[in-house]
View 1: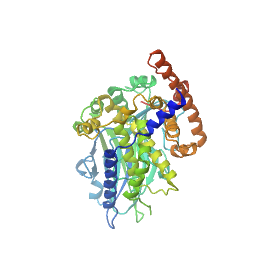
View 2: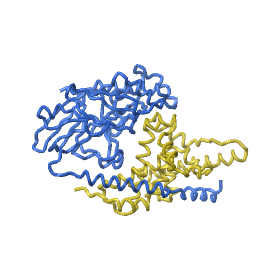
View 3: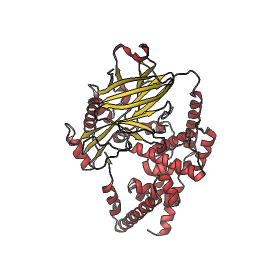
View 4: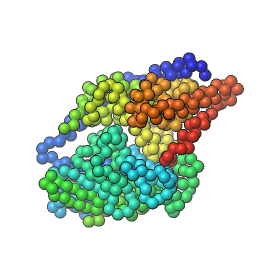
Length: 295
Length: 199
């Protein structure tokens, strides 16, 4: 191909631009986001919300059930829940789970590709297999919160920070096993308009039960089918269920409050993921994860 | 106290850099709908960005980097992977609503450089598109990708070799009447050495 032809082809690419309709829609979205930010600006005495976004798995289909007996109440949106047990018991903070729909998924990996800075796949002793990320959006609500610390108290689950917009936004003390944030530090009103996202991850060994076919497909470079994806997600969820997540809230007056949680796959987990991967309408798929407050 | 930008600033940035951000996103996602989403995400992120930009090039680099990160998120989204197999309902909705009456990808069909770029690995593709199509310098590409300029030069070297092979392959295929799907050795090498491969 001659140099002139290449230059002509590049010039043709450069002529592609946002159409006026698209530009108008984006500008409208910007104005709407700006308005919502203004309306949501902090006011004195208003309860603060701190959200450590644990995003991923993808799926408009994935919603979350919360198991805390009679202390359960919905709040904060269509896919958010609030554990009111804390507040009812005189505690000053409550924790909710929301869902992030469009993030994450699973990755295959092999030995030697681990990172220790919290931005990649952490070494959990699994030499090769899949890293699965889950869309847990744990939000701590309460008045006078100055800091929230998330930690993996037991098990091999870990946190991964994805600097969506700017690597400089990573929490200072971030590690695969714990991190802490201030209210609003990672929060954004409209997903995915965030400074960064924290995923909770689980590594699944290539020889784990049920994932042999998926691993074979991954090694050959092919995509995973619905059943294979669901099998890997289920194995990841089971690994997650063997872990305990600890949340510690520090208030402005220095007081702290700590609770521990376990997140597990619901009975319908695999079927729900398969259904979604097969194209079923997300709204018709029931909750697939449960969260249990341990103490 | 973090400085926040107002919508006027963002809209001015959209006017100035929206096209470049869109083309980069289009080159990465190969989807008009996804590219528009990426542009929207990037400029709304700018709305809340506390960073102080030194100059317009700094702002452009930031926008391009945000867009690339968003493209990567989209690429590894299981939602996207799943939906691709059954058709994108968002696209269908938009089409039925009359939002998209022209697809820029149709206009680029048959553009040999565009198609050859599309066959490059993501890292090479982004560097090559920004340098050879958008005309950014190595330093500017490095700022946008968040990598050293030496890395950009290496990527451009590999991309150039791969593109040359691609374009030569197309020319050969065209001359012989056979469809050309030549994969440059350089590109394959890079992919093989790639760390984590998404499924």
